[in-house]
Length: 121
Image 1 (cartoon, rainbow, N blue to C red):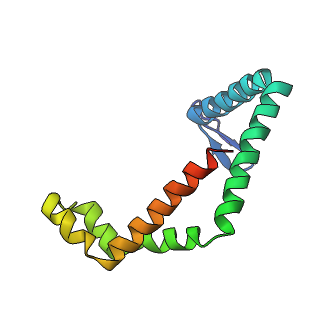
Image 2: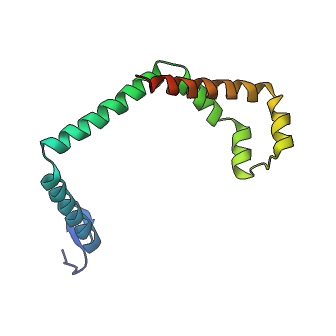
Image 3: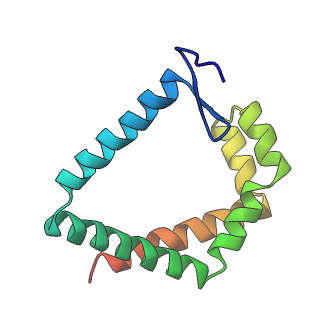
């Protein structure tokens, strides 16, 4: 087995100097995180995670996720993202007559009102 200065083989895996440097970066990052982690940091992370999981649970217990998923998969949305339509005041007035637009605005207004009510607590 010949040894190459730039690469080594350990159990059939070729390791390059950039691989070694990446491993050293991971070790340095791990040490930095270890120094950073304390009870206060862990408590803060737990609080953020708790709020996040509460929000996820609230969304899952409603139809919001399903509706948003179907809306994001709409082919018309893809077309609009690739070539956004330009809508002026007249176009907006025409869109107000569209039933899908009215339903979407109804959902959005209901959400905004619910957020407003939630601020009273």
